[in-house]
Length: 351
Ligand SMILES: [Zn+2]
Ligand SMILES: [Zn+2]
Image 1: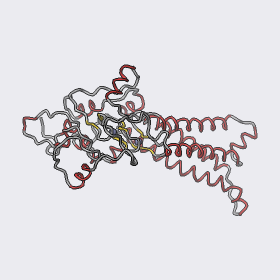
Image 2: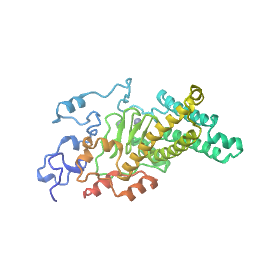
Image 3: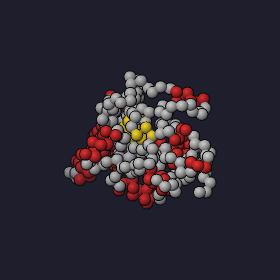
Image 4: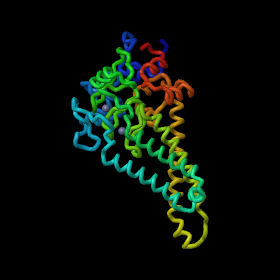
């Protein structure tokens, strides 16, 4: 086997996922961090394996830190404790506020467009109801998509008991089987076996498959299950915002008078808010589409140097299978992916 780029740094891709090394007889020194199935470096979960670790000050201090108290913010349940079955933020105060704010903003902005002298109002007065109706339906659709993506399971990693229960119920989106010779990490917070690309979210108190990020606006994680719908929601929201911006602009006629400002201040503010939201959603959508086309996540993109399976891969991005296949897998595949298989196949390692 040819010399690997990551030699001397921790045992290569197999070790990154806890797979026993294939060249054990060659005297390579394995770094315990990567072979003991502990929490992922950089995730700040406590290490499960016993024994002294050759870590520097900051890491050592971080790993010595006990798991957060169940009473504290972002607290983790103790090992063996029952985990919440849905998104922790789904019915929490933060989630309620975020959803109420989204609904109020959407409804308020749409109402403002109909109450001012805009194209929509003129069309309603003339009895041309098709465009106003389509606009309302699109707005409703984006709000429904928002609630769906906000309340659905983003891909929470299930415990072994839950997986067994799922098998007996024959659910459609059962987690894929990881080859038995791959030793999976165990999360130091919720104690589930973490598949590759999963990460524990402190806010949801769950490990999330193919974790992308925790979105405060939807007050839910974006993960393997709801990421495609998140993109659909962003696209629908962008269309509504662009149309809304056009409608608001149609109602603005500029005059330099105090009276004009009094009559148009709400419409002007609506227009400015729509412009700001449009820029945010557009940038978010473009960045996500770029990351999806590369088959990487926001978390992996931002923390590449802290993630062991990426640091110890021979490839810059071991999951990248080309734009077409990446997009197809993301939007068209209705099954969860065993990322370990792709990872080891791309790294030319037998699984
Ligand atoms: Zn976890
Ligand atoms: Zn989360």
